[in-house]
Amino acid sequence: AGARDVIRREDFAKTGATTMREVLNRIPGVSAPENNGTGSHDLAMNFGIRGLNPRLASRSTVLMDGIPVPFAPYGQPQLSLAPISLGNMDAIDVVRGGGAVRYGPQSVGGVVNFVTRAIPQDFGIEAGVEGQLSPTSSQNNPKETHNLMVGGTADNGFGTALLYSGTRGSDWREHSATRIDDLMLKSKYAPDEVHTFNSLLQYYDGEADMPGGLSRADYDADRWQSTRPYDRFWGRRKLASLGYQFQPDSQHKFNIQGFYTQTLRSGYLEQGKRITLSPRNYWVRGIEPRYSQIFMIGPSAHEVGVGYRYVNESTHEMRYYTATSSGQLPSGSSPYDRDTRSGTEAHAWYLDDKIDIGNWTITPGMRFEHIESYQNNAITGTHEEVSYNAPLPALNVLYHLTDSWNLYANTEGSFGTVQYSQIGKAVQSGNVEPEKARTWELGTRYDDGALTAEMGLFLINFNNQYDSNQTNDTVTA
Image (cartoon, rainbow, N blue to C red; front, top):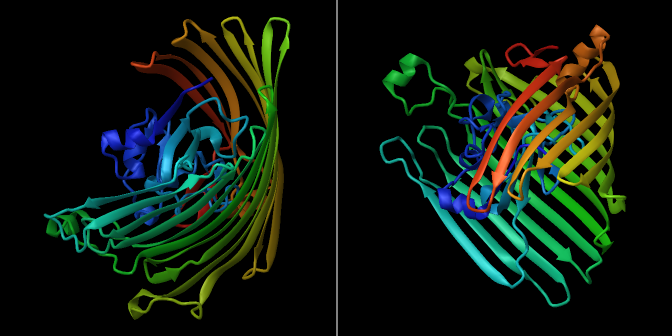
């Protein structure tokens, strides 16, 4: 029970949306501003829910088919590289409240799950192209996005689909050339109604020039220009996922999903007197089993769900530099001022019980996370570790006024991790605590198939909120 919206592929077409930002901005409570700063390119994603900071979507749990999208979901959840293409998606499921028990971390800003295109039942080929032209600007090459899906399902229950979405061209600013290639291979095998196997492979590769901001004087002189000729971003992501579902009847269901991601994000950035090159490599491994069962106790129907998720992530971050005055771009043989290796092991357990009795649906739940993180700094020779727990109780209540109209209320706890950039300060201060928040929500929802309406109130109370200063690399809490 809580505020939730699902935007489907047919809605993308009806509204003429061509970017993820346009789709997200149509969802109540979601703000997706123009990409800016070091996220001013099409490979990044910026959105915030319920007034939270939209920078690189770091306040929300972001998933794709239930798999964490951030290249380090615990240690660095910012989506400066978001390997998600609108052309490969069937739906966007946004849970603004009431979803913190089964999902995390960073769930104070809701849960967003991007659902990839389903494998078609009948074999088919579907292709499309979109273009963006800014004739009054200094656009060098019109931007085009090409989408392709080829696949189908055989009589024996085996289906596969190849998905591709690619972008080429530039925006209306100078120094904004973009190239993105997003390739997916999905497979599904359902030999009978009890067993289902599925897999997902993804290779995402992209690069983009970043035009940067303009001063008022520069804008008045030429609003199309870029005064940052060196800024450029690129990244690559490899993903592999395997899943299995066992459902012997309508009362029992068991799922297990394993995933592995390998990500590189890098780029040149002019920072005052220096030009920096910051290659960062990330490896994430995870597994998540879930079990649910439906049963009756007297007049009440119960659906109990229990699950566990294990995530192991490791990173290696470097930063090379050259003097801006030299006009030379840094390389792997240039001087460097950052060389850190970090890692996290995270265990999450959750339990909830959806109780239907009369016109009421009541769902108490609990999520408990145990996180251990470390960071090795090769330059200073230091090793720092943090370990903490996050118990997160929740209660959701729904009252059905009619089949189309209901009232809902919920309260839930959520937390933000101690990120790699924050470990040093947390250890030195002797106060290793995650960012915590409690959300209270009250609302009503109406949906009769022809009309959909929703109204809600919410309150978010933060405790130990982290804030980073990008200019001097400081962290306050």
